[in-house]
Structure formats: C-alpha cells, structure tokens
Length: 485
Image (cartoon, rainbow, N blue to C red; front, side):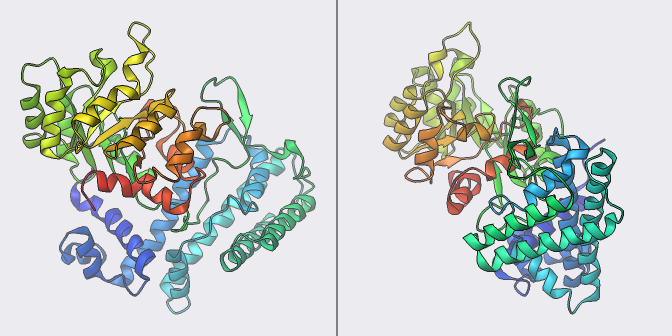
C-alpha cells in the first residue's frame, strides 16, 4: 500500500509543531498564525484540518494519547519479560526517581485548560482511563500467573495511579532530592509488600531482560533500562524533543521508513543505499523528511562532476566515502576531487571510520588517522566520521580535537554499548559531554540492527549526558552541520 497523500500527513506534522510551540511559549503563545509560520505553510491549511485552535488543542491531547499507546506497544515488543512478571517491572519503573520522567509543560498546560473546558477534560480523562486499563491488564496477567491474588483490581489500579501521579507531581515541585527519592522507595516497597511481591531490594526483583547484542544467547538483567513511559511526556530539560538521524540506513525501495521516523519522533533523517537512483527517488518523494547521501565512485574519470551532478540535479545533500567499499583509505588522492567539489558546494562528506568485518580486505582502511591529511588539506570541508571510530576511539577523539571541521557520528550499533564497562567508548563519552559536545551527531543505523528504531532512540536519550548536550547530540549539531541554524 502506498503512502498517504500530503493532505493526510499534514495533521501529525501540525500537531508536532503545535506541541513544540506550547513547550517553548505556553498555550497562549500557540496561535494558528505562529504555527503556520513555523512550518512555512499558509494558515489556511491548519484551519482546513482543525477548523480552530480549540479543535487543534483537543486533537493534541488525543495525539499525546496515541503516542502513549505507541510507546506501550514498543514496550511490549522490546520486553522479554513474561506477562505475569510485568507488574513488578512496572512498579520498579514508575517508582524509580532516576528513570521516571516528569511530564512536560505541554501536558500540564492542557491539564490546566481542562478545568475550564469540558471537551479538554474529556480528552484528559481518556488518557487516564487508558492508563488505568493498562494497569488492570498488568494485574490480570500477574494474577493469572499466580503472582498475586486480589479481588478488586479496578480499585487497586486507581490506588497505583494515585501513587504514581502523586510521586510524579512531588518530583516536579521538589526535584530529584533525597526526600523525594525516599518517598519513591517508600511507595515502591509498600506496594510490593501489599501485593506480597518479592523484596524490591533483592537482586532477583529485576525482571526486565535485554538480549545481549553480541551474543543473543546470553542475557543480562537491566531493570528498567529500556522501559518506556506509558503516557508521560519527556521533559524539555532532560530528553531531546527534536531529533535528526544522520545514519538511518533504510532500504531505499520501501516507504516503511517514514513510519519508523514518525514512531521514533525523528524530524528528518539521512538516507543512503548502494544505489544512488533508488536514494534519489526516496528524497524526491519525501523532501521534507529525508536527505540523501550519494555514493561517488572515486575511480570515475570525472568524480568531481558526478559529485556536483548528484547535488545540483538529483537533490543529494551530502556524499559518502567508504574506504572499505573502494578498498582505498580516506586519504587516497582518488577521493580528493570528491572532497574538493563537496567543499566548493558546502556539503558534508561522510567517511566510514571504523573497523569492517570483511576478512578479505584490510581492517586498517577505516582507521580515523587516514582522515587527518584530508582535514589538513580541506580545513573548511565538513567531515563526518561515521560509526565513532571503534576500535580506534581514542584516535578518533584526538582527530576531532585537532580539527574543528571533523564531526563524530554515533552509529555504533547499540547506544548501551557506550556505557558498558571497558567497551572502548569511555573517551568519546567523556569528551563528547565536554570539549567535543558541539561536534557529536546522532546516527541510529536504523534497520541494520535488531532493535527497533524507537528502542534505539530511547536508549540514546538515556545516555549519561548533560541535558543541553543531549539536545546538541540528537538535534542541534546536525542542524548546524546542514546549515539549518
């Protein structure tokens, strides 16, 4: 089935921009005129879709509910925990002050409006009803599996909801202080004791299992590390709300990638395939959501002309240099006509900078050190070193510190690898949070890994970075790289 026409995909786009404006300027600041100006469209398009601001706000609440249901489905898909044990997972998650996010001001603005607008109140009630029903389902599954025994599940679901909402509100007004943490622990232990569940301080209380990305046969308990909120919004000061994916290697023959981008909350992504014609068709069809990266043959007699043609005639926004693909290092003179034209056009050059798994060619081809002569020869060329430079991460960091035109892209398969002990990413995480925070850009690698794109995004959001650094990694730096700021 083909993608919907533009008239049908405008609504979610309008709602996303409305959400951002309310987050930045409050409910009163979200006028239809301002939303239209932000989107670069005529205000009549918004009116045709929503009639007026009241209808727009009502559908925004429904949009948050739909997003919540999507998060719940993602949670169910990524959790390997048995249904009867998901109740413990839920309690551990919602009563962990370090993992539970506070709702954004968008939700609270709509919540406040519900006191004077019955239609808005009805939509808010729908959100809470959805959450209560999910809690009841957790209780049903736990009871069916012999984990608990309770008569009035509806009453208990409302008790849980009250505790979750109360602690969440407490954290919003008091912050993540010692007394708030003690309150969370008190409620978690009290609820588990009430249900005769295992002692939450014991190790076996961690029931959320994630498959090991290196060896799927081995698993490791990681309580709450990938659990998504069921309906709460990410706060603007901790989790990025706008995301750019600079390494979304989708299959250029399918349109399903647009659904992936929507589900993961990605504003736009970079698309690449071994076949430039397929990529060109994709970016032509979805110009607002995809930017193409062209693969240019360095052995071609006029690689410079081919580079210019890809940008000027076919709409590509960057070029890709793959040393392992062409079996020559990044500093080989045959690549230089491509670099020179990219520099003239002001477009980024993506250079694969990591090991390869083809035992028939040299692993050394992807070493970051080969980019050093390129950066020296073209100090104004925007160079994006992909895949983080592993296993030469320290060399990659040194290269980026040495050259201000070198960016490091994070598509190293699994974000959680970055925080794993002795994984080799320690220096990138340290300098990426400090001196290099303006030159790290996010890439997911999309379909090349087993995890869903939404799951990768959620894990990346939980990296131990300063809030303002997360915004830079996942949006700001890429926007600057492509000249959007």
